[in-house]
Length: 150
Image 1 (tube, rainbow, N blue to C red):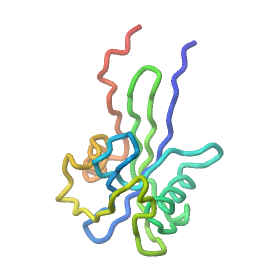
Image 2 (cartoon, helix red, strand yellow):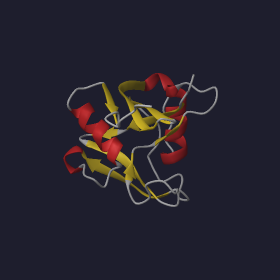
Image 3 (spheres, helix red, strand yellow):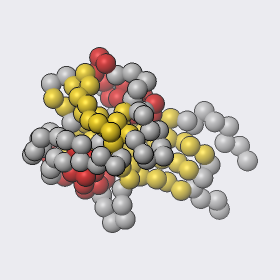
Image 4 (spheres, rainbow, N blue to C red):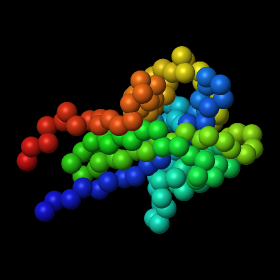
């Protein structure tokens, strides 16, 4: 039986009014020059919510208790037969601290971006997810239109 590598990732929506917080990726080797929600891979032994809380602290310096995260969206992304992504999006209900660029070696800036401002400056798959969230959807599959026949 052939298996796939499933890469679990988590994303956090921090809202201030009608704006969401993004980091501008630089020096990462992956989609540099685009905006991303605070996000990252789930590490060995972590739950999605624990990873989300850790990533928010590492990237923008605010503390969010895992219990204060509300799961709002899940997306499965087909990259290739060997690479399937599972993305879980959370919204932080409350947090402690004022966001700042806590990883200047990976991000050149942070920015509050109004929902109406969302554009292709945001990572394409995250923009797709955000549009789905705004439409009230909680699940999507992306990239599965690829011919997966053997």
